[in-house]
Image (tube, rainbow, N blue to C red; front, side, top):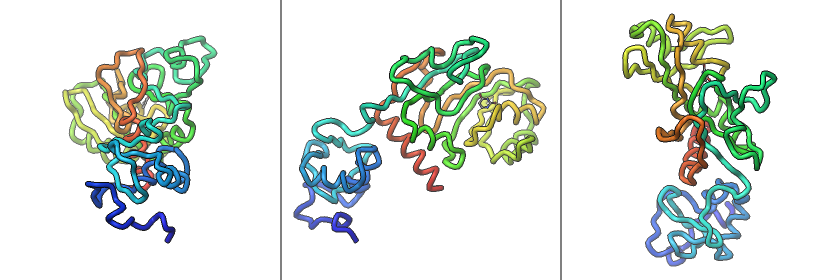
Length: 259
Ligand code: URA
């Protein structure tokens, strides 16, 4: 066992620290500051504070509630990375250039630094889209095996969806590219479905609804993992808050560990 993994003697622990939470060096490393060894050195050099107190190696923290700073700056988003949450309107395409000259999502966010969309929404789908220049996080979110949930509201043709069709959506639908994974489905109003899926197949929600005889009339993505924002108006974007970015990282790590 490496010396850093051992719990420090009680008299070296910060006043009030408890045997709870995660090890500070692990939390720091998860933010991309560097390897655990590098983060251990930052702590050993006295450059890390927790709730204003200089931290010692082995200190446990609650990343959601403890205020953790390195050289006086709160940990979180790397300064060279940007993360935008965009509410994509219909008629705007997700790819970066369109031969037909339609507006793209890149027209709706700052041109520099250059970002790209994480996954895609159809031109006729509205709602939340994440754009970033953090390729590693983007790959992890977009990868179906990481299973970050995406929630959609679908207004469907044909009125109230019957229990058999809802059950079919929940169990998985046979599409031409294979059976869909079980979805979470509710019907908050007749003819309006709330669907939560973690795959990202082409036009998946539309094809699932079509398959049960209720084609989609309007489709809005309302959540990506922990990210939602009812106040973000179509066409507008904002940067992720540090807590949102952190919970997104958590959601990706949880999904990829299968817990
Ligand atoms: N499912 C669809 O059918 N379209 C989208 O844009 C996203 C999910």
